[in-house]
View (cartoon, rainbow, N blue to C red):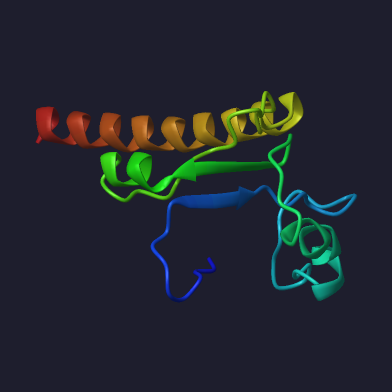
Length: 114
């Protein structure tokens, strides 16, 4: 976030930084690189709203209790997991549940026969 000294903030600008090709997120092994911000640097001095840039009034932020987590209003994109990832996670969670069910069943059988 950047603020201009000497005058009150009237709007807060947001810019949705795109991940580089082949990245789904940043990590220790895939960190952000300075060169990736050339687009934002070029945009900064001639800011206009667009598919990746929007502004929110200070009054709106105040009304939201100063919550700055405001998503891109033009984004139709949703970040869903792939079907294969979802099915894999479902199988893993089912396995965990099966183990818990077996443990519970053993405990109940022990309590009843005990």
